Image (cartoon, rainbow, N blue to C red; front, side, top):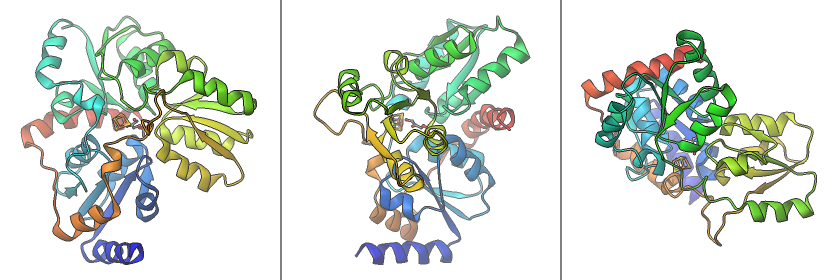
Length: 312
Ligand code: 13P
Ligand code: SF4
């Protein structure tokens, strides 16, 4: 059955000149059929560069919407239109506008995990893999006393502020996955695995990041596990990334950081809405399709393009 779906997806992909972009948090079977797997920055670049007629974005809505903004002549499909993001949802455009009005002389940096309407209100976009670089660039261009608004993730804002020495006011959003990790349970794992390195995504809370041996985006974490000679890692991000870690370093041990509750809260419920069957359906029916108002898209494109240029 699975094989039938996979061969049908491959047939439709060829027939329709489509490409499948998948985030590391997707189910393993989706990662295995994707043309490209990556973090938010990798996938934005792929979306901008592709010459395929159709982009199937196996990720969440803000990622697919970003692909449409960067490459508007392509048809962008998302397997499940309900695949949102708690961070993006924490920042409604009207409320963000009022927040910005309180800090009129501030430069507005928005994490890519936000809607097109927030991007359109921003001077620059960043992802977790280039946030530090972007803030350093602002420092270089406008001086160390340039005031900054950073939204919508308060943990990433605090981490990047610490790394760069730049003060910033942040929107108080968080990710439902990255705020759930239990430091007590991680400490318990360390008792049995004293040599294991704790690697964490910067969306995690500051107290956890303070204990981490490495902090970085999903791609950066993956590279770290490949290049570092350690053989055991406790991974504090969505557990989908473990699939690539195990594939790339089959002899190493990867332990997902456990959540506070006895739940699967280290799985992103939005990312996990996508399935192979939905990918097949969306390729076949060419729906659900991402649409972005052209005026909004033109405004959102400016800070996105600036990010891609500054991160070359
Ligand atoms: P990355 O850019 O590191 O892939 O992170 C995306 C994301 O949604 C993290 O929760
Ligand atoms: Fe959003 Fe968190 Fe899911 Fe990433 S893991 S898409 S930040 S809800």
